[in-house]
Length: 423
Image (cartoon, rainbow, N blue to C red; front, side):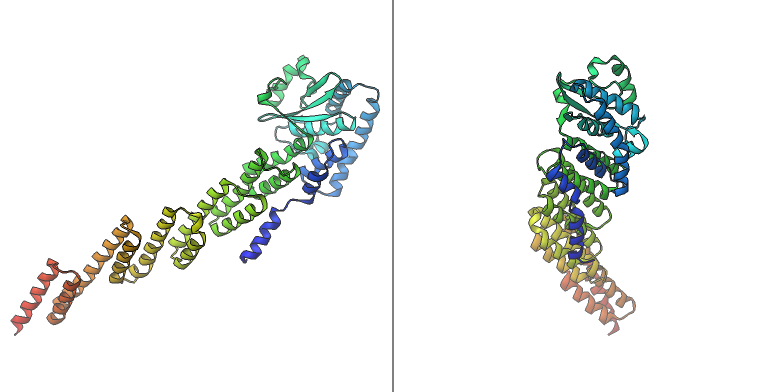
């Protein structure tokens, strides 16, 4: 696939769904239908119209019953009624990771997020004003009443106004494994609107995808969540988005495709803006690309790539890659061809160009030693074959390259003596 075609494919993946855009632009937290459709979409079991309708078929008669039963109640009584009604008619089994509203409506299993979202749907249908509360590892609701804002731990039948319920205190921790965070503990709890509460479904799906290393689903959920929550580049939501996108890029690096990883970072930055974390990622991708190209002997590719990305590298890193390229070129061409003299000369030229790098010095020494061995062995072989004239010529030629070498000088003396004896 061409780079242009791959870029188009990446851009398409990086685009949010239309539903996420619609939620960003027109979500109405006072409309229970809007909340349900957001939750259904976030739960994503194929997004079928039949699945959506199945949820309506489950909810509509219950909503009608709640609205009829609570018509004359005050908001406090009404909020508690909805909590009890929900547990009697819909919730059957707590499962810590069951965050999907679709599964809750179909099977009755729930966790803190799915039960809080369901409560928001039903309480909003009853005319109540509901917000969410998020802690480090838990979520619940807070309801506006004539007595003020009241917490509702939706996972427990007795969770409404939990500070007044002795039954709640004895049951909650054993059921969920979480500790109730009192309203005064502002440091440990964050109030969130219903848009962000429902979006926790996407967040939990992200966590599951991360644990399964399903980076594509993780990124898709992160993109849609960020859009649905309003596209802010401040705070944790944006950090979560960047983290998800980086995971996809890291997988490309792990699959030994750093070129695609760099293209992925280009498209992500174009779509969602720069970040120092992308700078770090690109350095790693460049390092991996250069290592692959150099180790495979693809010297021209390494040179071209270094030229194209030198602006992203420090001067010392660019210099180091240049040295690695030259060493690889000499080793994979002149060393493999046993062209020791050319290797020696090129290593010497590289030292002149790049400085006394220990790797270049070692390479030059190896090339020189191999060059000497080649010259000496050729002269010695001629001498052993009693071709004393050729031995003399090769020894003299060798001394021109390695002046003062005692081994070549000794071999030359042997050759001269043999020629003189022959006279």
